[in-house]
Image (cartoon, rainbow, N blue to C red):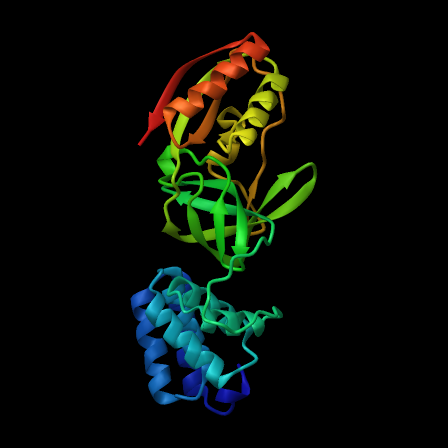
Length: 291
């Protein structure tokens, strides 16, 4: 326990009890005890930060912003509180406050009241839908927002081009070619994309034909995903407390492939599929739009 509670066993014990409730998922009791601690020790930063974290996980952005602000005022070296404050400020579109918080974490943004619109590269994002998890790729436009660039399964409720709020805590790893790529939780959809989700059966056993369609889709700004090889939709095994997602080996399928596609309309998608059919001399069927 930090010096803020040194010599006060009652406060230390109360904090441990609150933390135990917090970790056990009894948030009602955890919140009650953290607030009691704030009344008893209003200058102690940790109860504020714990409350800010709880409200962040619940996507309750105003209280998260408030309690993380209180935590950073009392302990400017609390990087976790600055991180959660930046995320909450981003969710609330408090752009200047978000930039200030990110700068405490090593960034060097101009502290203006404008949204960041950068290209911070690809990020693996975990979408949660019931008992399963789905890992998709996104393009990060600031430290807490990303645009989905995969075609999520329609059951997930998400779509290609959606703008989402992303946590900064690594929740697992996507294992590819022996390398572990960090995966981050999606916290909230900020804006729905302008694309419709489709699926189609491609009657080919050649992976080269699938790659060709992927290339044609890129040329026309159509989202593409090989759903037949997306084991990311299955419950993920856990290794040392974190999820690991292992994509299946790239094997040719004798019965064809189901692919996910994202386009503005069925018409533009059909044109790309017909071009693919002419080039490969293969066929497709079961084109359907998902709501």
